[in-house]
Length: 232
Image 1 (spheres, rainbow, N blue to C red):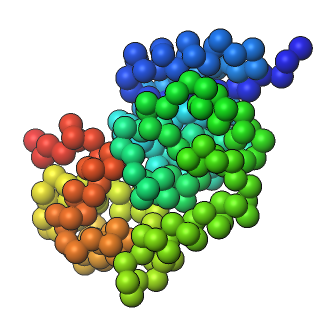
Image 2: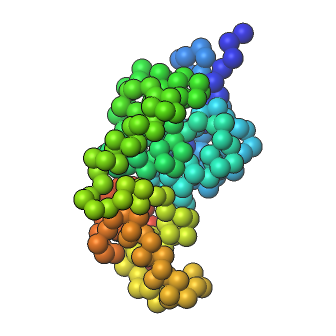
């Protein structure tokens, strides 16, 4: 009997989930064991079923895919995560890898490439731009990306540092256009704490101001457009 690779799909579009399931179910060694549409639900379900691989969208309700990836890898280090997203660029790949993803693909990836990646990540490998990397190879790849993307005079290790859960929460308020006072009141923290968090966000994103940070978050799908409307 073939030991099947157990897979969980996390995406809030039913049609996309159905398409993934159909592709994966054709393979004798792959088994789609669960589907979920929400980031927080994904963390709970992953803890319960402990899949081998999670195919995870970035742009999700409740928590974005980078946050979900970090939470899942902290609790289930043996579960491999492949991020699938419509928001594709080199910076996003680095953010995904730093969050704990083993591979990253745009949603238009071909079935053959995705299936190949699923099999490779279960072996403890990383797959980036169709290249299979071990831990040393990944380290070299990251170093090269930092060298290429880091602005002059900025230390590479200060870039692409994952935002904390609180920073991501505050960034969502920033995208809505909330002031520091409004954020402090909503989160029941001091305005100075909000200011400190925003300074950290700007530093991590190499953003000059709040507007640039908001654009960055939206462009990478970290915050959903439907979540940017001010609360009533």
